[in-house]
Length: 98
Length: 98
Length: 98
Length: 98
Image (cartoon, rainbow over all chains, first blue to last red; front, top):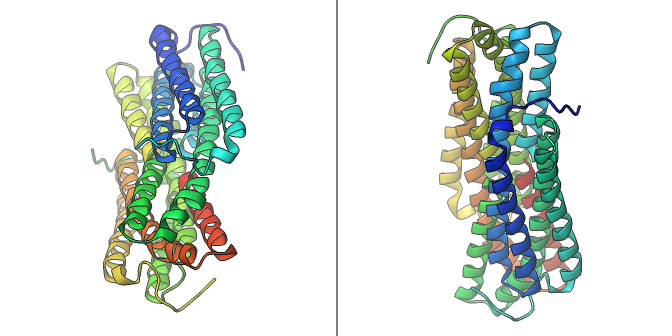
């Protein structure tokens, strides 16, 4: 579902983009470590750091989605509220299982 | 610990670099989604995909490290073997907890 | 915060209790495997199964909490809605990071 | 594969059993919380604690398996070593993905 109206994260767009560029840098850093034959364990340590950074980004985006999109749907009530929560729960399950 | 000698992953360097460049592309894709005000849930779905890709990369690197570096240290025996396994276990714990 | 009023999960209490008793049985099964000197890898396989069962229980409880408690607080509006979402987001973060 | 010979964890059997009984107690505690209509978030907090306890048990068992069974197989060499590492890597993947 793609919609151009404001989302929960819109107010924090700049900080999210800054964080994603940092994660992009971490992944490029992993490429350099592999190219330069760095020690496996040191590379794995950096993978854990990049994974945690992605996790923090997703948890913040989720909180903003709940605070904004899910609360607004709940206040409108009806089947849309239930669908919006179901959608959020499915996204949470994907995060927990990834 | 940084060492220039061959590692477990050295034989697979090309495929690892290809995989990391794909993950870099996924993270840039997340930036575009945020810039274009895409729906939060669609962004979260892509974050889970990027996290799983990082996970697969780390599990393969770990398997190669165990097969190569840890088995070689075990065959040399002595305290180096125990230290090499301890180091691998700590890396596994970081992966499980990230 | 402990409250005796109905929760999102109250309607599903029986199935949750049945699921938790099964998980208890899985943990007792792990004890038997250790007592009977079963192979480490077989025990680890059962630990992953018990962890997934706990995960499924928590995701269902969370969905019911969002559908019931968070939606109700959102409809009442005011600071309580924001606090209820913050609380849910913190619980989601603990699940993602455990 | 079930074998009665000593495993990596055999020396720590007592502490592993103690830990598993504590986890069993945590799961029974979850049952009581559901029976007594405790607040969803408080139950989710205890689920995260039980999940972390299972995780710690599995990481310790894995370390002992690597130190004992995998190192011994590596020292014997041949295809058995590679198979033993493959088996450990698969178990690690299940833990990381659970």
